[in-house]
Image (cartoon, rainbow, N blue to C red; front, side, top):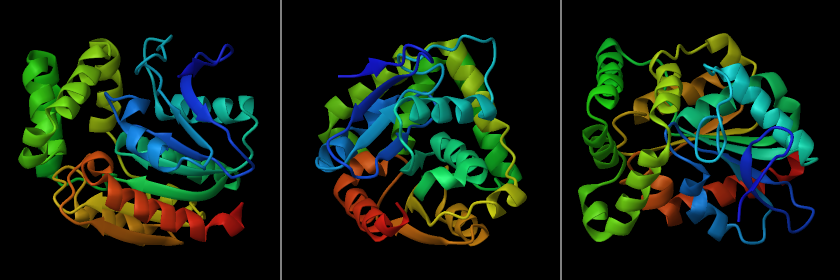
Length: 265
C-alpha cells in the first residue's frame, strides 16, 4: 500500500525491512511507480522505495509547469524525509534522465546508479519521430497509447498478457493529460549535457532492450562511454519496458550489479 508524504505530497511505496541500502526506482513519463511491481516482488529481502513523479499517479503537480530541477528536489526531499542516507538509484526512460541529473549533483547519496532505456543524443530523424508522438498525444490520445504499448512490448507478449497491456493502458489513461504533456514536452526537448555526464562518479550500469526503438542500443553504448565508471549490458529480445516483459533477466542483471556495489554503502 502506498502512502503520501505529508510535507511534500509525493506518493510512494517504501518497504523498509532491515539495514540494507535501499533500491530507489524512478518510472518513466506517463507511467507510475506500479511499473516496478516485478522488481518489488523480486527483491523481497531488500529495502525498496518507488514513488510517483510530480504530476503522475497520486503525486500532484501544484505549479503550472515542471522541470528537471523540480524532479531533483522531489527525490532529495523524499529521501531526506525517509532518512535514507545512501541508495542504489534505478531510473527508467525519462526516469533515467532524472537519475542522471541527480547523480551528477548528489552523487554522494548514491551507492550505485542504473540507467535503463535512456535516450542519448537523438538524431534529427529520431527527434522528428518523438515530436510526432507528442503531437499525436494531443490529437488522438487513444491511438498514442496503443502505439506506445506496441513499441514498449513485443506483439507476442501483448497477445499472451492482455491483463498487463490493459493495466499499462489504463495507467496512461489515468494520468492527467495536461500534466502528461508538460512532462512529455521536457522529454521531447531534452538536450544531453556531456559535461554533466562527466560529473557522474558513481558506479553505473547502463541497460537497454535489444529491440528498443526509442532508447536504442547504440544510444546506450555511447551513453555508457561518457560515464567514467560505467558498464553496458544489453537485454536480449527486450523492448522498452523489458523490466516487465524480460523481468527475470532484468532482475538478475540488476541483482548482480547491486551485489557488487554493497562495498559502496
